[in-house]
Image (cartoon, rainbow, N blue to C red; front, side):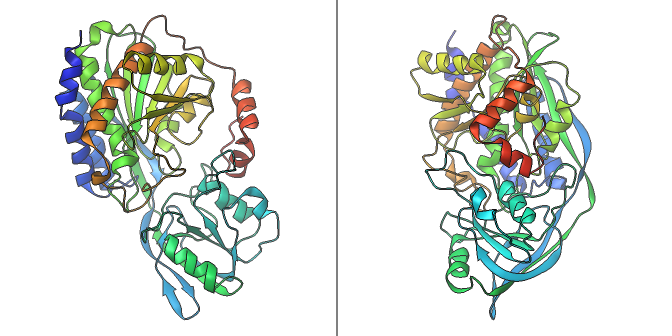
Length: 431
């Protein structure tokens, strides 16, 4: 009964797939690298015994990075364009809005260039997403947006702008390192600066990888991840590790199929980093979802963390597994509407996002060129594969508590969390 645990602690299947993904290079949505990663993941799932492994393609708004710069005084400062920023140039008075709390935008910012941090203070009870800060700046009339990293190391942050209805953002947007941001804040506030971006926006194609393990039941427990990554880094943590973990857990589940009462559907989505496009595309068509366990940021620390959004049955399954293996797992009851479980949860379906505790608020190395394989440990990967395989077996039990919620309950919970206003600002409010 426990031989599979020893096999998992010695398996290199998932880790080898992680290495394969990071060695591809650019896995940006709609690029040849993403297409290669999708095909490699389909092959890996088939090789571990999952059946009917396919890639389902879909069209997306493409975006290809060109040059960008911030001109301040007589100096040109290093930066990178934020994906789906429009090409263009914006000159205006530099206004530092600090951490970008909502009240910081309650003023006329017409024609200005806004400088805003990538983090929020500890006293704020929710994380304020980059896109919320961007669209609050747009609403206040800003002409340009400068996103300043809070992590040292000359690491300009990336991350998309744009909405589902308007995939290309409204004003030029760039990311700058903490060090460049500090220079701008100290030397150039209230002076005119210029933000310049250049990019291409072709039509493109992405895709989702699908496969199954377990009995051929009508409903399925979904185990998901996203394959794409930002073009500035290897995307090891975000989210090569998540997709590699799906492959490793699929290997375990293929060996434990007789313990599964419910089919487990493996879905590795494309185009997550540009607005949950792949998962949104599939969620609109899926009629077999019993629950979603989404892996995004696993392996970043030894303690798994899952946001279960009030779906008590999901949290109970994680807690049982943590107790069974005497290994801490942090269950957070709130919703986290920023990853591939969300298009399903917005329909009222039970879903959670699984990441890891890092001891930091925000993305850390994520969304920078420092998101590389050397930050991750094989031991942690194998430990979490054991825990996650057991969680999926728990969720696939016939008597698992996986009750859907009325959409009104989801909406009310987001209002109570303080998330609703930000989601409305970014055009992400689905209720």
